[in-house]
Image 1 (cartoon, rainbow, N blue to C red):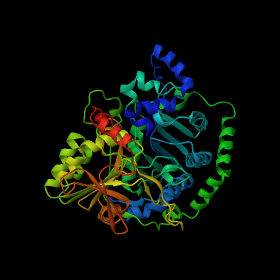
Image 2 (cartoon, rainbow, N blue to C red):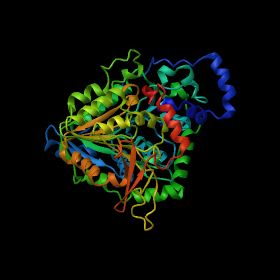
Image 3 (cartoon, rainbow, N blue to C red):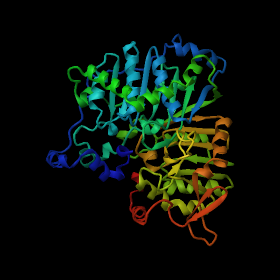
Image 4 (cartoon, rainbow, N blue to C red):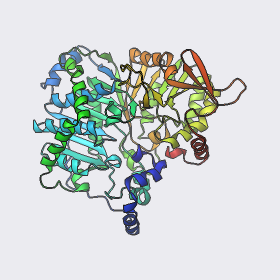
Length: 527
């Protein structure tokens, strides 16, 4: 999450700007930050809505008509199915693809999905891609080549104008570039959409040797798809969305040929070939096209930030996702089950959670342990609130750093690898769920833009609650107040036994001391 969490500015600087560019950075600092290009001449476009006769429209239309006012929802917890759904929707699209992401890596799955989008454009599909620009490092040539296709347009959200020393923008234009677009959606023919927590990259889709993220998306059909399309249009036409060519320039000669060669090289890679072969066994989209995909028909509503949040220097809360979400869900009466990889409730959020628990509702929260998180400073914002929550009756669980991944569950060795929580979901009173990009932290609440679906579905809500009942206690440490009043202590359950820890498990004293130091600094608003 390098571009989105400015508390890691030093890490951002060193990763984006190696020592060889430090001198160039110092030179550019003397000249200030580069100005943004003009939006004059940028065209305003909108989702294609006359798509009922497309393949996807014919496939979902009868089922939508049979469930008036409701949307069909199918959860995507399995990483390779989440990738296959996107790639196969791109293959099935006939009119349009509208795609919006915070991160799109140039790795195996990133390039495989770029190729699927490219092939769709070659068939005549109109493709619009909106990418947050903080995480497009190394992608300028690919973006330029894709954008040069007559059927593909790419816009960069809140761009960083210094392409070779991007971290410079965080030094010279911090107030603007600190606000990012964290939204994630993939919509085909205005008929089917995928919304949730996943970005595009190997770690999100269970590919390669990277850390595997535990995440969640949903496929949705029906009325809520139009809400997602309307939200995409709002961001696409917003003052923060710049045509890619105005930021990175035009594609070079033979850009299309170079792109095709890159796609061929990725497909020829043995790991990519094995991943693609595994995808062939995924029949999810074929089941959707055949009208056989299991769908939960429910009232569903999109909640999202207004893109004005990115440029809002007044700290107004009128345009925030939270201002929509809280009136819809209300205060839970019996239970709240919340999953958030970056959990920084702040003073206000802590008070709300304490109040819910003290009124008798069961409140259970799963987040990353210090050993599992990929953004350690964020843990400091959570750790300082941990004992207050526990003493109010909130149950806390922290995901272990090493648990069997989806790829390894079927392996005869039963080995484990590094896994990190990335899903952002919650269940209210076991009858309503939220699935989206929103972390329960200060950055999602007040800095980044976010989106997600509120779904009135007892089946999905109870599935999350059941995970807290059965699966999570085995995969996570339970955090609690010790019998003698010490706080916190961690419990690991293995083979029926309990192992107690009086310090953050799987971490060393230096890392723990660093987190304690960060927890006293006034940086919570950044996390």
